[in-house]
Length: 500
Ligand code: AHR
Image: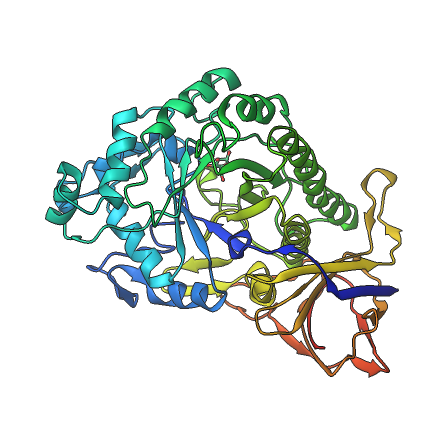
């Protein structure tokens, strides 16, 4: 197959945040997965944050972390999570397993985690069950540098300096778990709530994210754009982003399918559903273009990933699932699509960071493993802050059933901040390797290195065998004139770094 890339045809900037992550108070994501506290644990940590997890996330250059939910966000009352630990209120996590949430991980802990990770912050506010005052005071608490009741309270709790809130979500899925609202009702609430998300420091403005849809209801984004977005000439700053959620579920809601046991038909059905996100993004873009032709507002895909039945013997409310080579392909496909839509897609957050849906890390007590999805993020990190370039791949349609066909190959390419051309390529076939000849529209190829993640479609890492699926260097690339020739194995994701 022929892959054609024009390194000089620059199509847009790839925001690092398109490789973002999402952490929710759900199952063992925060507690155990990230935060073990400072007392009563043998797990090495800094201020309660697991050092192994922090190091692993820094290695993939985690750009932004969304918190505290998800559905949890619209039931979260931030004041319960500040102050002396022993005085923090306990609550029931009604969405996720009905377990006791002791609020030992709150605003200060989240900000400390982001400091250790060196990533941007994305805080999701509570519209569903919170008040305007509560939201406004949270923003004041986190960001105001001066004399005010909230700044004094923050200082009394140990943080004199304000933090930077890069993104603030005004509610989550408010058409569903975030209050079951109609679009008109939410849009009017959004206008009101966002008014009090003050930019106390104009030099460090907060990007405000308005709740969008799950991609099936297109009336929602249309209505909220109509009511909430005004051209910057009219009302500057009502919204900077519109969210959008899309999950890849192989089966249906009540029978999603197993994370590790599936046949070839299900492999193709799942990848077909992963590719569907591109149609949903395109529809969102069309709606946004109608209201905002200048592209001021970013599409924020702040939840995406695979969603399977929970692992046998685990709490159904904890959504704990394994992660195979199929998930590596799902991750590669999504990140390629986000690259190609970088004009509108300014942030995307895979759900969820550790121990939940398509996690990059799984933990069991003191043990930690990196999933196949982790290794894909590790290969794609070179696209962060890069310039998308035009690419095209000859293709064939493959698949086990007519309804669930997929292209054999899928790619994206960018000129990286290191001056190299980075190509990421997925082979969606369960069993067929593909010979590739890559050409570069007249640019001279001076060298190439490559790496790969893949294997048998069910392959995954376990705590007993943590390195079944890892990133490996690939030495099968040959430079022929100004072309690069190689064979990409079936069910694998590759990264080529080309000196040009
Ligand atoms: O990721 C799990 C849940 O899925 C989130 O809490 C919610 O926003 C979505 O419905």
